Length: 102
Image 1 (cartoon, rainbow, N blue to C red):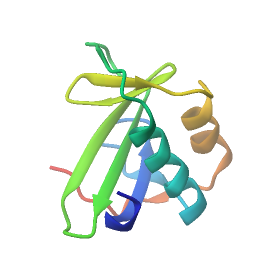
Image 2: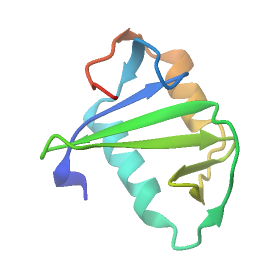
Image 3: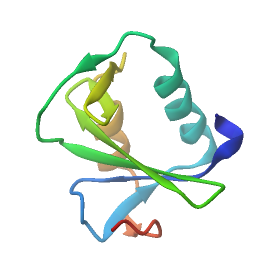
């Protein structure tokens, strides 16, 4: 739910200290991507990017990006624009991560 999202960051590695902080437009688009597909696929693979969603209750959900798919707990949905997360990461200014993951 868009109203429950406080912040979203993209990192290249799970424990990277630098990330791309998404603006409200891209947060809305990511929430739409995550909620749009009912079809999921079970995958086990090493992610190319990590997407951390911090909710207003301070919990954090880590999503893995693998090629044209994004998922959590190894259940993945297809992303129409297969380079969406790569493009966001490469073209935006990186800053020190603000979302703490353990």
